[in-house]
Length: 359
Image (cartoon, rainbow, N blue to C red):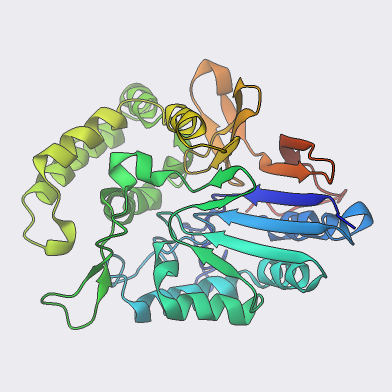
């Protein structure tokens, strides 16, 4: 007898090395402090009507944050398989409740997990990292580097549609002149490692604020010295990267121009979703992540797009989303035996608790 099928999609959790560094100090680069709500979320989809149903959890990229495990990391931009394994081990050790919840979910009958790689967790491309995650979560865990298509659905992280974080899957590894192969990272990864992460030491909220252009305008008025230093650092960073002879940082003037054009505007993948929906036969639903902003759009009957947003705190400066925001957003796709199909953007509200850690 056919059963109702559920697909649950989350993205952009950005798990780092945990809330504390090895020396006991606070890890200012850690963005994910919501292991308990996430465990409750998976428990919810393992009981009641979901206990005997087919439920597939789709982790749609940037679940792990290989770019920001610990504040001081000498190999930050040299993502060899050895380094990626070490960072993945640190992330697993820093979030035991999170990985226990994934393991418990995957062990339920008819429950499964799919992992799509984003730009912050590009280290998952290494086979030993995938095996490490299978060992910790479940042997049935499946990985996709590009996209996942099934039953009229198209799901991918979305970073390939933007110049700053596009990963060349046909030229993923660098070996020439290297003692061991390394991943060829996109421009945006270097920007996070060498520009955003150091700024967080001075202003921990920097990575949460959007639009970044509007933040700089605000900072010029209210945090002038820091803003001026940031602007000069930004200019110097662009110039340095364009004249770098390091093969892993080889970005052309054309690439930089594309990145600068995108840098000035709020990120949106709506056009990319629409192109897939109307350009690929049989596709009726598209889901992306990457932008950290939850979106639901219906372009036509049976042509829907959901961006699953992020489970991290954001600080909006535009009038539409002014202030701090924290929403545990996700997509739920329900396919019934009679052919009925329903896609919904949801937010996990959690179970009641009297206190919660905020630092």
